[in-house]
Image 1 (tube, rainbow, N blue to C red):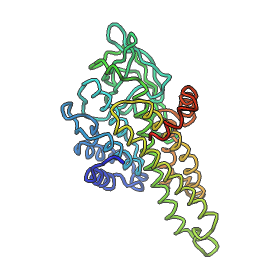
Image 2: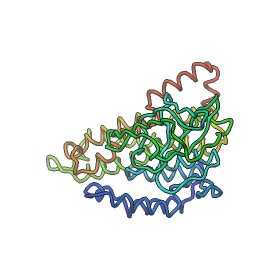
Image 3: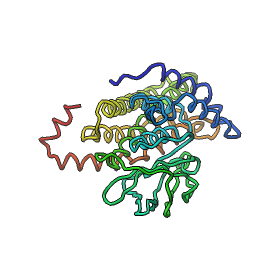
Length: 354
């Protein structure tokens, strides 16, 4: 298990508890809370936790950053914290200083590509980019002459078509049409686009594990409060069974996401073991979303579907996170292809090396 700074996690938790109570946000009439929360996170150095101090960041470990995102997942707040952390990490790979403010990254889907032209401009379209319409800058990984480059781009210099995911959070389309980046730098020679997606998949796995912990608590508390037929619904065996299944899915998600976090934190390269762990985590946490969200809504009944109740803030965001950076089915195909290519004799050593 990777060592995580407990003071950092305590500070993160306090910021979210003080400034992003789900019930308060659910009834908020405007977005003033969003700016207050982001300012507090930025002032604490959490938004650039993965950026080395020489590049203007906090220089936290990968494990610290992933743990920050698990805490953020428990509150399911619609801000691009995970995207900004990942953007800062990507820019630092190219020795590019990270600007202040919210950022996102592109591309997030393996099949999307951005090209860097001979004039060092960017061209191409990418889809499903989280929060693109509400950030100031975008960290981009692009291809040029069989080499990868990292670029920092102002969102004002792109064409952004706003679209929404299931949660209402933006999942936008960005079109680069000979877009001039603010800065561009070669990526490390051993880096691949898949490295970015493995990081993104692990980020979402950590956020999912955090949100599942919250809906488990919500559902358990509600079952102990709700009375039907003159007794708490938590006394009914069917409800108890469902809550036990939800607890199991939550525990498995925590274990899978934590294992991926540990592997990425402990290794200095994105090898097949990192791929195995990150892909497995995204598959298993994605499956847990389907089971867990369904059970939580079954426990709550009709009230859980209303806009006034906070449950949808978690479940709808979970459904978005399940598909970001590749759904469980997409990762399952890639993982199956890797195992088939290596053969049965190589599978057991890979499993036991974890």
